[in-house]
Every structure is written in C-alpha cells, then in structure tokens.
Length: 95
Image (cartoon, rainbow, N blue to C red; front, top):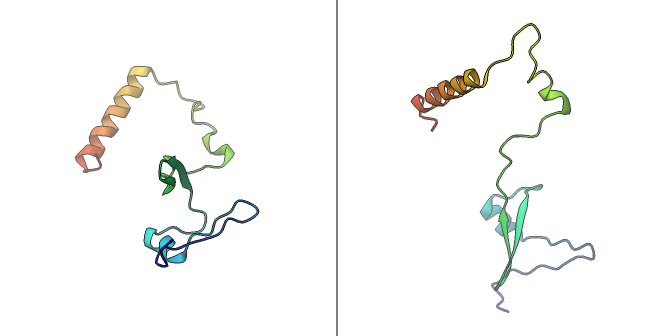
C-alpha cells in the first residue's frame, strides 16, 4: 500500500473513522448518513440523499384531513388546487 493512501482501522464495534481531510473535502459533518455499496473493487461510501420531507413531530399532521366546519374537497377541486400551485411555482422559476 502506498504511503500517500490514507488508512484507518476497523474497531471492535465495526466502526471506521474516516480521515479528516476526506470528510472536509466532501463536507461530511457528524451525523452524515452514508450509503454503503459493495462493488467489485471494494466498498463504496457516498452521502445519502436527504429525506424529501424533514422529520415532523407526531402530532404535526393532526387536522390535515379533517377541517372542522368546512366541507371536504372533491378530487377535482384538489387536482385544480395542485395544478394552480404547480403553475404558480413554475411562474416563479421554481420548476
């Protein structure tokens, strides 16, 4: 093994410490979720994509389906609202 190749050791708990220079180069901070893929050449570590929605408290969705005092929307009304929002976001350059 070449002296310029960073090395690390596997702990008794199966943990690996990545060299600081490599973590900094990739912008990986403590808690970074990594995907581990087995390849012909060995193991590949890569940053996992962030979740589409940020985690929310358990009660955050309360009332999302039932709106007291208001009638339920039809599928057509929901489709129209979604279409209007997509068009508005597109007009703002979001999509």
